[in-house]
Amino acid sequence: MKRLVAFLLLATSSAAFGQELQKFENCSLVEAGWADGDSFPVKLPDGKEIVLRLYYVDCNEVAAATETDQRRVRDQSSYFGIDDHQVTLEFGRRAADELKKLLAKPFTVHTAFATAPGRSAKPRTYGFITLSDGRDLGEVLVGEGLARSYGVRRNTPGGLNAEAAEAKMDDLELGAAIARRGIWSKTDPQRLITLREDRRAEERELQEAFGTNIGQPLDPNTATVDEIMLLPGVGEVLAERIVEGRPYKSVDDLRRVPGIGEKVFARLKDSLQIAP
Image 1 (cartoon, rainbow, N blue to C red):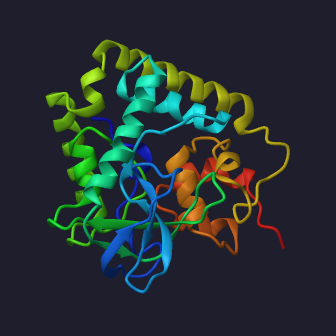
Image 2 (cartoon, rainbow, N blue to C red; image 1 turned 90 degrees about the vertical axis):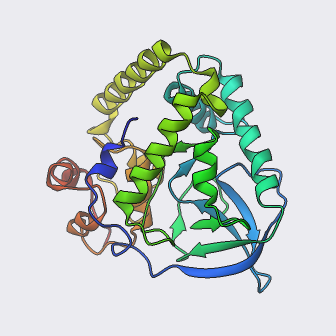
């Protein structure tokens, strides 16, 4: 199963951003019509509500009302080797429905309150969820074929470092694909190869057309995820990590962002500028 290039450059994670994980038991799901399988509101024991974004997991969209959502659905369809975007959306809704069942009983939230950037106006917080039966929610979703192994990562509540946790998620995804569980039951293996090749070609074309011609340097402290993704060699996960790592005092500070090695930094530095 494909490993994300940005992740392969990462040796450590939690030390780079945020504090240690805090544990909150007896949490509950808050009903919300916009919620999907990986982003949803939860109520902590003290009554405070936060919008939680799961580490390591990307569930399909449940609707595609905006152009941005439509692009994400196209990407998700390509990843799973599916031509019919309605099938992709249907499994997004299935993931959201399964989430409600899994979180029907009180659960435990682990979070360092790191901000999870997104395209919506709702502030989100990265976190893990341990279900009432002790299982990890993200692992369950990926293992059932209702999510892909994808997204921001860090050391887990169970003590796995980021690299080991990613490998475990990738193995769970591979197992779901082989067993044709969940959305993988709709995958056309040959189309998967073709669709992924087409998406990579499109990304290269966009980067060649716009990546080095933004007009003026971007300020990584204020740029949106979509704007940062126009930079050469920057995908969605790395763009989110750049936003998560704010603020930056100098462009050189971006070297501490997981996934930005010397080669990536060399491509980016002339396209970035920190406002005084």
